[in-house]
Length: 200
Image (cartoon, rainbow, N blue to C red; front, side):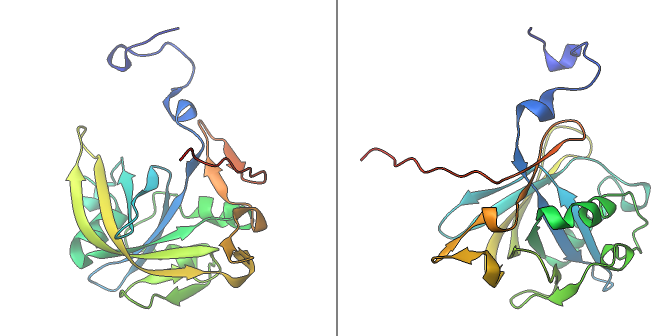
């Protein structure tokens, strides 16, 4: 089968997300200039550079109360900071609860009863129980083709690692079952890891 996205695929559901999978989930926490905290998951998320460490996520939809984007992007525009919380299997249900189109005044930490802690290098909340959190300073927001598509890039200024996720000096995702996004409504959990040495 071949299809050009502009002409449609003819399938019951769009296969694009299923092709590009599994994808890590960036559970993005932000704080607006008005002091309201927000927490929302994004599956268009990844690390993009080592030195200095940098990450990105993309927001691809909008809310009526946010002028063409969502709470996360609005807050980051206002304050220039955000935190990326890594999602474990145990948090799958509360993570899903934070994905709803809630009013901009809603604090998803409170809505889903998620323990909150303050970041150390930025003025932002983080998920206290997350296996890891990356505190980030905004470097740029890039508007992509499409009405509500924004890619947000940030430099990592602080890293929290949960102690029980460190095994022999390595951050071990199998210790907590890192959650990954598949296509459609599907998710996966990382259990099996193998090593391949690069040539040279």
